[in-house]
Length: 251
Length: 287
Image 1 (cartoon, each protein chain N blue to C red):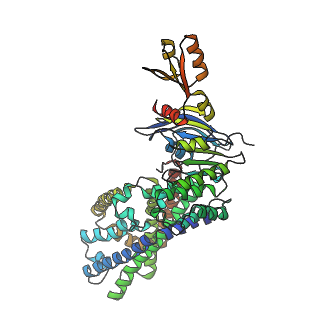
Image 2 (image 1 turned 120 degrees about the vertical axis):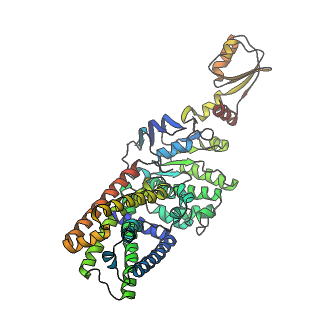
């Protein structure tokens, strides 16, 4: 089953290579823009966000890690993401209709989508955060925010978070009608803003800043917990997707 | 040996403005069923429900004598389906499409594929989306045949196809049926296809099967009769499909029975003519 799912995921990358390469390039561009903003806003030091905290800084930092990160689970420069008209025709569902008419078990179809999401997420998140790190380290020549060990814990923590939400991506693409792709970001943004402001009101800190503190205080357990939750959520999304694929109309 | 290749019972699929079923259908080996009906009558929907591309709301479907779970694929390996759905992968070349499809059929024959590609003059390097509608139909048709299926579900396979290829497709379908073990369900609007390939005709209207006939029965029983008069008993007879008073003319779906009635009513038969299949189909779909 796994080899069949990998085969399908590989085919999907081959079919979507233009969208995928474009997504990587845009992700690098986003990384450069974000690091430029971080550097100019904090005198070349990432840590400045913790010292001179303003709501805007918190909002921006949280937006990068919480708001943008889940999008790295999808090839967001592909046509359905760029054009509402394209998405409306539910191209993902139509492609799944073809696969569903073939003798492919639903579990293989669902797993192939999860594998595709995982590979996309790993490549894009490494690209994005790698770009930011390279630019910050390259330009400011220092990284005072945390030790290397804590940085790894911090990144694993966010990877766990991205895993937890990233699994939603194939579910949205293949389990719902195409329009949702364009509706959901606004819903997510609304939820994010409500959550962010509430968090700031109660804790006086941004969510990411709080996580940095927790990383320093708790260490590895927080990364392991986050990764565990991420893996569990990915399995859960995969099961939901499988169930949905068994019961949905594709055309 | 399995007695029926496909059996649908009380199958329904509901939409806001259209409902399919409840309908029963059985496909036996050696039989070609022509699925006819006006546009929007539910032919494509029925085939999609059978293939699980659309989820039925209720009812049971058995393939090869067995009701299958959603994750089972054995039955799909023995079914060839052409339902105009490949456009979603229109960005692939025909060769790439073949790679995507053939992987899932253990019995796929590359030799047969190559033979058919040559026979229908298909360019493997052409993107599917760039192919004409007729060529797309031919490609789909080829894909349905290359894994040695036992049952073909074909949705208007010759629509938009050139005359020469239509003839070849007909030949291929007749060859497919040669061993008497296989079956075809053919949704079509083409009388010639029904005439030359089909054994049974199923008429769909508003999602329901309204008639189901053996083709030979149709040509034998349906007739137009010119008479001297039409009595009330004749007008109201269930086998009278249509009548005209000037000149007196009756269309019936049971010539023998109606002849008896007419004689009993002491009406003179001036002339009689069996209906062509095309005329019968018009009556079946229209009325």
